Image 1 (cartoon, rainbow over the protein chains, first blue to last red):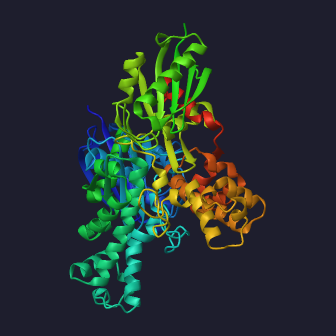
Image 2: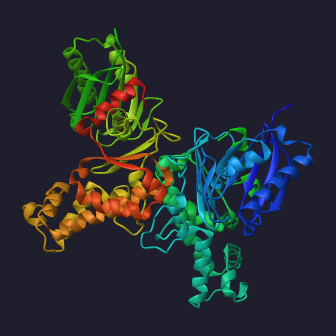
Image 3: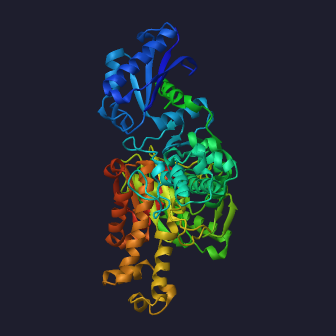
Length: 319
Length: 319
């Protein structure tokens, strides 16, 4: 019998679990709610249920699985299989590998979610065949995975890749991390929503207010993209600003890494040219010609499956 | 007979050449002026003269040398042994490896000077025993060498490590590269001299003017450090500002790389605590606790020999 693997993408709202062969081809998959509000034990039960269900679909037992890869949001100790902190799950110091191994007998490899996504795109998505790339996800926050020589670069204690907290405007807006002017505070979904609210609050002549039915808290990248596509100047300006800063952040990374490829993922990339055009403009302005000319900028292609495919790559040992 | 190697540090003003054993122990060394103003052929003659002289000292012939490593300022193609551009030498597209191999029969490995210095400190200096480190040189400009898994990370076309052109203050001062607010424009020797001149020009109450005998062009890090040590407030403020921005730059790198060690070299580091204290303060403020607590910040220890020792490491194949 061939070798089979499990990939588990454990997110704050859903668990995506898949069984795959040694080439990473998915034989079956399943999506369950995380139910993180019911506590750690319930989440772990849900992971086990997702494993049982997906194995059932293909008539496999635990013994048929060589290894499982698990992608988790938050700082980890990969060697010890320990989750230091996963704010989205309310977890602190959870020895998740040991727990899952005890319950299933299947060896576990952990990876943080941004790194897992980077591996997903590298092995099964936009980065196939590329040895050195950066994967950057732009959604509520901005995260990154650094792939060097086809492997994740983890750093001294698995903390590498925090590119969202690169400071590029020290007098800029407050970031969730407590500092000011991080890339995440200037170009993430959170930053874009904030700029949308500010535009409405300043009584700028903008249809953002109308599109949000006057509910400031509902203003997000989708609404601001819609407004911009309808010709709204304030909305367009927000995308130009976010794209400008994203371009500076990417230029810094280009000058530091001279990578073969940068892959951009996350919900904010759905805005397409609204953010890509100003990004490209400042990327070109702020990066060395040599690095700019040799890099390919690609949008991620795996969508919602990026995490689980990355977890499969981790399980197979491609990490 | 054991294996012997040559290391050559080719700078804009001097050529430092050394012969070493396979452990990197220097048996003999020599320093000659580069005479870059006399043109490329004269510089190459001088390199050959330096090789001949240093080999003479130990009674070696070309045949006794396994390989030579050459450190050169400027963008290179390492595989082809080609110097694209070395502004300090006035060189463009010089196939230096081929030229030196033809003249000596000794195989040549090239490396850019910042990377060579990083290797020097890694193998023979402050970074011994460390697998993942960043070397940063702060002098006229700011350059860097990235060591991952004991090797230089070169990037897609040998352009990685341009950390001096990380933009961290987009509305900041003009950089030599044409952009605004690069780390180099905020914390290099050039930036510090510029701030010193500005302080004098603004008729600030500062002894920098006196120490420079009214010659604005002579104002450099040494003078501003001296003024600060004499209690001059304007001078102290300059170091606080440069250290602050250096700390932001290093914090960004800490969050991206989570390295085991950062080694700081270059003439500006002679200012010691004047720049290190404000640097440490903003490094702590802007970096993740995890990365901050696990990194060692060290000053370079090899001084003027860092380049030639790095070139020896390159020759030995440690790169």
